[in-house]
Image 1 (cartoon, helix red, strand yellow):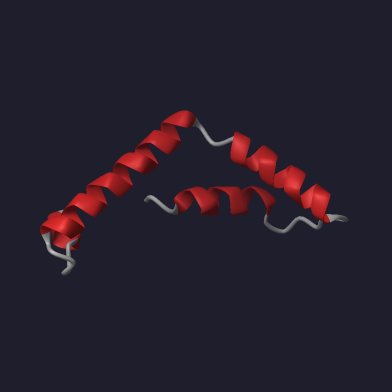
Image 2: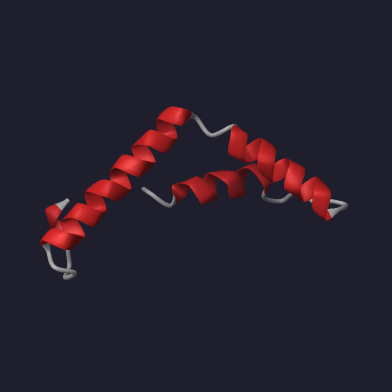
Length: 66
């Protein structure tokens, strides 16, 4: 799904304790960099597909169109 990217990053740092904000930032940067380009492309394509379905359904329930 389009919003799993943040879950992916969160999963990489969940349960860890960081001594400083800079340590947290560094861990987030490493987690973000570990996301595969193919995964990002699939995420973007998923969002585009969902947006098109939403427009086609004129904002109504569009899940059945997916």
